Image (cartoon, rainbow, N blue to C red; front, side, top):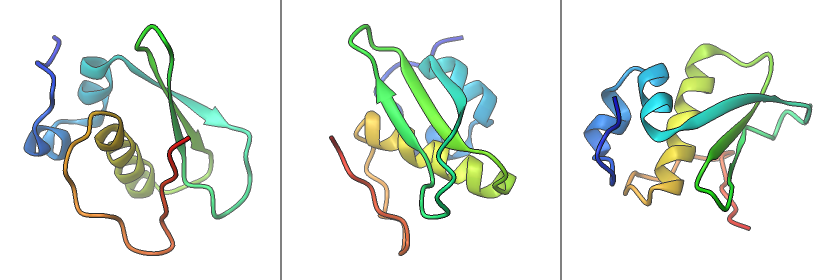
Length: 91
């Protein structure tokens, strides 16, 4: 099933994460970055494919929250900014 883009904030926050990843075509991969201040990164390839690089060893809640937040950034979904120490940088 593919969701019509743009995603709504409600769908982004409420859909089960595996469903959301499938709908957006995002793939989650383990990151080799071990810095505790690194929470994840998203790369959008020229063909539109999304890659979420997530650190290993984090809680399920943190993993879920950051994955959704990164998707919100890619799809320009208006969500409140995460509190410190979370910072997003667009390259």
